[in-house]
Structures are given as C-alpha cells and as structure tokens.
Length: 300
Ligand code: SF4
Image (cartoon, rainbow, N blue to C red; front, top):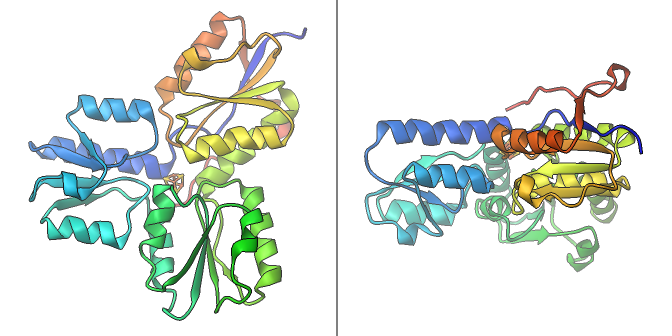
C-alpha cells in the first residue's frame, strides 16, 4: 500500500452567503436582549445549530409558533412571500439573512408574468426551492426534481423560465437545461449552481486523480455537501459524508484521501476530522502545483 496521504480539497467550508448569515445572527445577538426565533435553520449544519442554541436562539418551524411582536430570523435559504406575510401579520420583527444569490432567484421568479411558466429544477422539499416558488406570481410553476421527471411536464409551456436550486451538481444542471431546451425552444435559462458551490465541486473533481476515496465533512441535510460527495461518486471514487470524525467509515482500504467540506461546514469540524486522520497515520499534503488551483473567489 502507498503512503497514507490526505489532500485538503480547497475551496471548502463556509461560503460568503453562510458567513453573511452568521454575521447577521451575531450582530442581532449582540444588539438585542430578547429571544431570537430562527425559522427552520440559519444554514444546514448541526454544529452551527447547536452553537446558536447555546447562544439562546430558538428554532421554530413556522411564524405561527412565535409570540406576536417577537423577533424572527429567516435563514440563508430564504422564504416565500406567504411566510413573510404571515410574519408581518403577527407584527414580527423580521431579520432576513437570506443569501443575496437566493434573493436574486426570488426576484427572477417574481418577474415571470402571470401567463408564463416557471420551471424550478430542485428538491421540492428544500427550503430554498419552496422559497423561490413562493415568490412566483404565475400559477404555472413546475418543480422538477430530476432529469427523468421532465417527462411529467406539459407538452406546451408558455415562455418558460428555468431557475435552478443553487446547490445541484453543475453537470446535472447542464444536462437538465439542454434537455429542456430541446423540448421548449423558447426556454430562458438563468444560471445554475452558485459560484461557491461550483468551485467546491470543481475542487472535488480536481483531487479525484490523486485519491482512493473522498471524505466530505457536512451535515446529512446539507444539499451542497451531499452534492460534493456525489460528484466524487459520479467520477468513480468511494465517497463519504460525515458530520464528525466519529462517523468515518473503515478507511483501511484507502491510502490516499481527499478531505473536503460543504459550504455550511465550520472550519473546526474539518480540523477535527483532519486531526483524527493524522492520528491514523495520514500525512497532510498539497496537490501538485501543476495540477492547477480552483479560484477561491466568490461573487456575491
Ligand atoms: S451556497 Fe451559494 S446560494 Fe447557498 S448560501 Fe452559499 S453562496 Fe448563497
């Protein structure tokens, strides 16, 4: 067996949207004495959630659970108009930590004329997708989970606009868009995964030739972390998503590892996994420089 090595996949960890949402929470925490109620989750990570609870945040599933006049925080994935209106009806003080990239999708969904169609490629149960659909003024909204599900769309769609969940696999979005274009030639397709997600997926793709398996640190309900693991699998490598070192599988078959982190994973979580791997004899290394680096820039 070759020398035990772990390559850190970079970029990884907090994206600008997650950092922004956490800053908004910290500012609110510092400036207010009253309880901050957080709708669903600020970002999809169990450690972040626990830290917030330790700081007094109370997580709720609906504005209905929040006492009138209290403070409610909307997370990075955003909410639909209906949820916003419910919070306003209860005179809640809204702090909106929605990522600017998701806000852009809200505006695009709202701009679709009532007689036209909006197709959203994404998981209908994910808060981001619900939020985007919840900003549409048209009734012709179709949420499509997979390329296979395109078959369930009507044969004719009036001037469709395609919007995509920001955390899908970038290649899957390309294939989805191409197929939809062949069926609906006047389709307008506005973007794909956000840059932060794209660069994290690219970074996984680059490490693949050098490793036997990839470990992604992130929570099981983090869409982008799941996609990073899936990118490694679609390229034929064993890949595991773990929230902490205690969830690592038997690594005996894998001498060379790639270690990456989802966009909502705190650095401490990755650091702990790295430390554990080092105790197991894995030596941390950089990818060979001729291999090229993935840009660390993130547009907002
Ligand atoms: S992954 Fe992209 S869309 Fe989601 S919070 Fe981060 S920057 Fe925003």
